[in-house]
Image 1 (cartoon, rainbow over the protein chains, first blue to last red):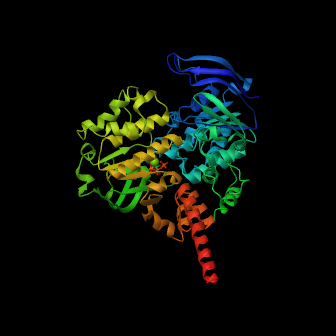
Image 2: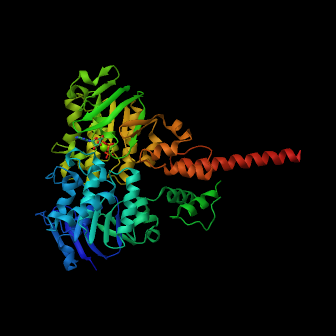
Length: 274
Length: 281
Ligand SMILES: Nc1ncnc2c1ncn2[C@@H]1O[C@H](COP(=O)(O)OP(=O)(O)OP(=O)(O)O)[C@@H](O)[C@H]1O
Ligand SMILES: [Mg+2]
């Protein structure tokens, strides 16, 4: 166990509705959890809680507890890329390379190890070409990639990503999904994301939040049902089949699943209409 | 209002972002701007409302050259909602944020109520925008731009950070803008959601135009997949499904695709029926 939420509740202040209610959740090495849900459901608060970053809210009210394996709290143990990643660039360094290396520098790693890690992280994210650019002078998506690379360079055991593809072009988003699918074999991932394509590629488990509560928790293919559908985004092909089944289209086979996540099977089902 | 880019290049001190860009966006149309990260999309929009002026060439809004006007004057023509909503929000309440541009720049708050209704912001009007969730901050920023009621509305990645519920609100706002004959220019990575609204597509790669023209013309081209791949864009999922399923035309959303499949089926049934009748006679 890397981190475990035990009946954890949290409100940003006494007179605000709780952002999280009675969360029970365990995250383990080698597993990836994708958190889905409508905006305001509590995804970002859950990410901040997992990163132990909620202490900066002095008026907050919390109950229950979050247990962590001892080393997951240490530097390099947990890394987070926040939804508002713009605020995470330090701008203390004049090149992207130095900015990415800076996170490791803080950890007191030897110089050649820092250089190796920063180079590796830039390559993984596909931004070697930005290495010598000033972080201040980048486009939105380029900045998001810099913060992602910084988090990777820390080599965390728990990597928390809050909407990590929000500003990425589709090709870069697909590339990041591949990187994460590879990474999850070694470390634990907690990703707040509604994009169904990333979820399909990366998630071992999907946790669906609604108004601060967990309303579903399990494999993507298992949690889908009418009450949950409004809270998660379905892949386009799944949505099409689901609509056709819902409309009881006469040409659809009776055995057609309402939620068909496989592209091939969904197309086969839709061929019934052709 | 017509928008013309005429041989526009733009360089930041350390980087050339746009090279010889020309295009003409018709009044009342919706144009999507797509391309990989760093391809120049945001720069393209900032040239439209005059925050940036071309290094070479001209940007004209109808017959106004952006070089001849200050940003504050151009704000009457074009409202831009930024890629990062936090760069835009400054008022102490949502209501003030929505009213600011509309009252100070256009002198009429007539769209404020409509916008707060369409974007479902009524419950938040007295709250500080910075205390809201990211998705709501984005909606407030978009709403503030729309409420200015300018002939041109420019949105930089408006779907980013929105869940499907808010995306639907945004869709209504775009449709409403269209019904008001506004020219809408949208930078986006989310073709799957926005293609149904689009008239024209501008595709950028490394600051250069790879395609500018009608949406349907783009999908009629044999090289559409290569074109998109060259711009970091994936072939839209409904177009891929339309092709695989042999739908008669490219569909841009799920419902359209299913209707098309049903229509084809009905057409095929009718043809076979007709044949049977002929054979019977
Ligand atoms: N202030 C700046 N100074 C120097 N270069 C910049 C500046 N802002 C952007 N650039 C560079 O100009 C190019 C175009 O940037 P722009 O922000 O227009 O891209 P974009 O298409 O909007 O990208 P994204 O999808 O990531 O938002 C990029 O190479 C970027 O690094
Ligand atoms: Mg941009």
